[in-house]
Image 1 (tube, helix red, strand yellow):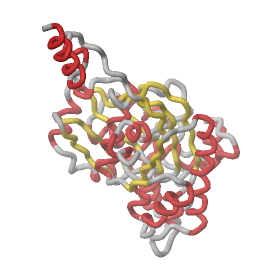
Image 2 (cartoon, one colour):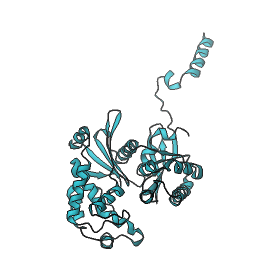
Image 3 (cartoon, helix red, strand yellow):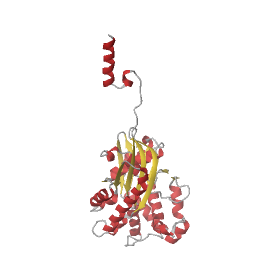
Image 4 (tube, helix red, strand yellow):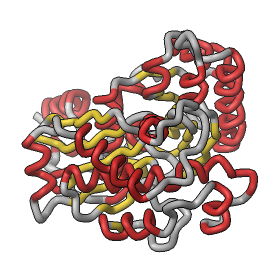
Length: 349
């Protein structure tokens, strides 16, 4: 009888976990993977190296974030054939190689990059993605604008810790913007075409200027009014469901990407009044005056061309959608955070 009982226990141990047989809930070990994620945007390439708990799909340790400036969209705007030049392609590959060198001491086990609007539009965007994979060893996925919005949402709620039920993300990008909400098990993404660079070009057109590469500064008060009306007219197709969500008192708007108040004091939370005040204090200022006002270093002189236009674009979007308050949740990693937490980008590893 004892021999039969011993045999029965032995059989059970081979086919079932100990916790199941003896009624305990022994926790399963969590698998941690160290990943390097890249977000190839229109003006910058962002990298984040993190330890990701694959079991819980959660970032447990941020080891490194870094940015390389590569003006992909500006290069494409200057292109006569809709293709990225060899020079800007070389800059892109080299920037990613240099970022990888900075990540090397952390020994990431896997790496992946997503590319957004500029590579979507460039006729040789796929070819550049292939170059990055072959020369830098980083697989690249050129994502749709809808997917970009979803990644922005995942990044925003992960960084802020806000319940997705109450969140709406606003991804302010160099070439486009996305406003995203989660509806049960799917997402609704409004795909806006006014990013930092397209809006600057629109502002130049309002001013009657044909050179798309120059700064729009100084910007007059009437031009600000015209620009705000232009944004309002452009955003007439926002779905009613999203507008209703934005008007709910328990909704929190989380912004990622470009902070329109970058470099200014108390820029984490802002409303329309704050944006209006910052615009009014910079109306009729040229680039040099803006550099002095905002203490912009000479090596970053190009930033001054976008200070006022970014403020106007942010204000126009808030007014058009009746957004009362925004919390800036963005980090250097930007959409790289969403990439780190999206299993489909890591299935090959």
